[in-house]
Length: 71
Image (cartoon, rainbow, N blue to C red; front, side, top):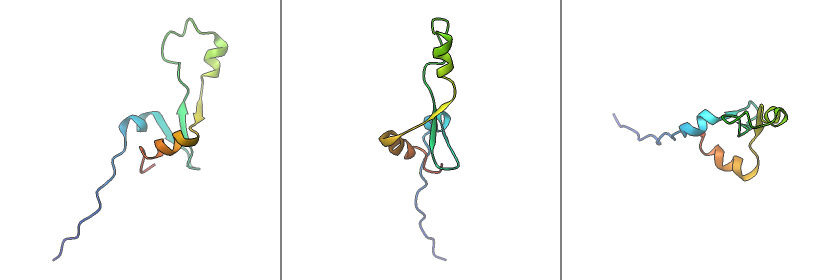
């Protein structure tokens, strides 16, 4: 019986996996920064605009996609 060598598996970057989401259309979504601490000194409007996710765009998306090889 001959044993065939398999290609090595690609590792997912765990930090990227925790911080990014991949949509069904293949877009990368990330959270907006600045919502963790020292919120009392920030205005309500500023905190409201930090809600939700935004799409990772351009060259940043191309680089980040390599960190998540299996989506």
